[in-house]
Image (tube, rainbow, N blue to C red; front, top):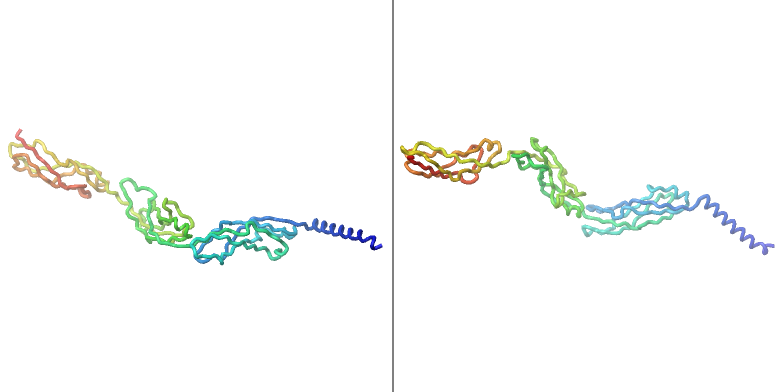
Length: 310
């Protein structure tokens, strides 16, 4: 009897197992979930900075649905360890394996895949150099005025950062506007690292970040042409009279503050004595330059005086 029924018994057992697996899978089915996870960098060498070229990876976890559902994206940590990376060059690019951390309570019950399984990273040396502070003006001063040479303290700053960014820095710039004028002790202003085109360079630190600057505004030297007016003293020998005179040059250029030059239109000469003159005379005579101005060029002119009895 047993021999005749064993096939049925094996079939019944197989059916029972199939039914058990089916019922169990329906009650607790398999599940899969994929997350985008940020990569964290650990063990960066002193004096170095790391720039992740693969900032995120894709992590797929698989297992029983009841277990998978207990895991959130925040529970998954991805990191790369740079402690074994060579630092014999100032800039190093490398592919470093990603290490995944899951909650210990579920780690054994899940399988996971990582894409990509290695992250690209660029490690650079951090360096510093000292630059003088260069002062730029945000606008032109009012007409007739100019900015004095600003007093900056300290006159230089340290700029530091990863070497690829630091190489772009050409100068450290302080920009001043009219608001900086007149403060008796000056004020503190931010210094900006800029490239050759004057654009600010990011990821570069400046120490000190601010410097004190004092700025004054002064009247700018201006120029003005003025006619030379000779001054005569005495009279020619009777019955001669002055018929005409010439002055070479007939005008000169004065330099001075705009407020001073505004009231000057002519420049007199020292007195030219004509007492007893009985013929045409030529004299080189000095100019009487107005106070607060100076002559551009020579300070003497040649005056020729013509006399006649007519």
